[in-house]
Length: 427
Ligand code: AMP
Ligand code: GLY
Image (tube, rainbow, N blue to C red; front, side, top):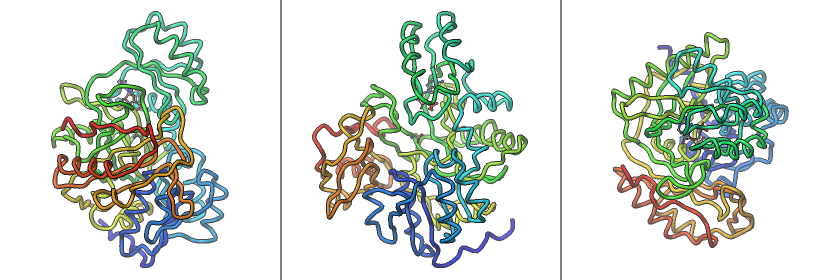
């Protein structure tokens, strides 16, 4: 193993994005002694006010703007938080400018950007996934609905911010769900109809360059809006780490999913650099299946995974951005439980301008990562759908969970703010 590229002292990092995941990234990077400053574009009310961190008014999804800023300012590292900049080619533009960037090029990011492309890739490489039919036009699927087997999962192929999936129990339900899905911009490039898989979900992350990779701590997300996994799907209402994951399951995931994915990408001429997130379903026999690929950290999973990284996160990401995957990872032996606080009308709509109070009191008990917030004068106001992710840390999940909910109890939230009371309850 060659030595890792030296990490520069006094490093300057740019984080792209403005959600809870990006607050956690900025906070974690700022904790490394070799990092002098972290800029977050555009950031939020939490990154604005974090030691060593500042917000930067820059459109994170515009490759020309980001690359010309980076050519001028020469940051030591750019970390791309969300998927949209990856799909508009921001990582490609930064690589062309010679700036180290953690995130895949556009061609590799299509694994997330097009579910039809991802399904075809999974099938080409014999990677376990739900059987599916791929439709270019929703009218063609409409004609088949009465002959398909239920329950069935309908998915808009393109990006839909967590709203592009409908699980339907009958053809009647499927007709109305399809009508709604077909209106999403993400459905323009087609729709998948796939078999419904039963089991436990797992968010599995690797840091990869080509076929080399390091496994990061895994997490479990709670995607449904309401307690008991009811209500509509959301971007994620809470997460915890570590999730139950035996050595045997871990090696099955590596052998049947991670390795063939990275090798397949290299063989197809779209090698991957960055964090690759496998959204998995583990069935009752312990067999893992890929539900989806994401080309980035999860949100809210990042908020419970990043605090568990020991050593220097900057050195790790900087090395990976330059093609060196360290031989091993330091993981802190602690547990985190993150509870998302969302706006009253989430996921349909966000909230704007309501005060969020009690943040300091909550922060004395848990990590409080901001998402849809902004700072005006000395106050923090709502400005989005998911507002905060309150993360308790402890020696085990029970302790972490207790701390998270104690901290939540200290917040003074807008009336009707939503949160789940059962994050990590069943472990
Ligand atoms: P996706 O965006 O593809 O991950 O889908 C969002 C959520 O829908 C997943 O996290 C699962 O909870 C659910 N889901 C997706 N595909 C399936 C499937 N084939 N079987 C059961 N649930 C699924
Ligand atoms: N929490 C799910 C995601 O980030 O896609």
